[in-house]
Length: 146
Image 1 (cartoon, helix red, strand yellow):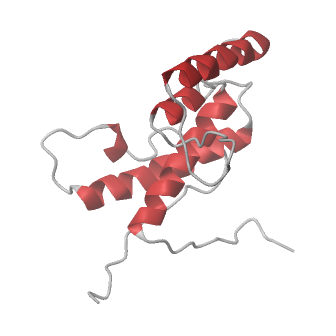
Image 2 (cartoon, helix red, strand yellow):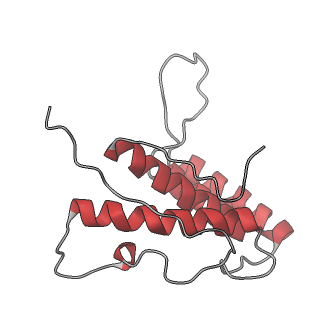
C-alpha cells in the first residue's frame, strides 16, 4: 500500500526531461480546455498524418492544419471557454501536471542557461500552489563525463 509520504524519483536524460516537460505542459493545457494546442503540434510537424501506403511518415500540410483548427473550434463549442489553472473546474490532475512542469522547467532552464540576460517564466519554478500535494522537487545531477 502506498503511503502519502512516499516519493517517486525518475532519472532522465536532458532530452527525455525536455519531452516530459512538454508533455506536462500539454496535458495541463488540455485539462484547462486549451485544445488549440493540438493545432500548434500540427504546425510544428509533430503530429503524423495518415498516408495511404503507411510506410513514409508525413505531416499535415496547411489545408490539413486548417481542418484540424476547424475541428478544435468544434471541440471548443462543446467544452466552452478555457479556464486558468487555478479555476475550480480544472481537474486536480491538470493542476498537478502544472506544478510538476513548473518545477521541471526551472531546472531545465537553469541547466541550459544558468545566467540569462532576461529571465523568462521558465526560471520562476512553482510560485503559486494549486494542490495540497507535497511540493514537486526537480534537480539536475552532473553526468559522469563519459
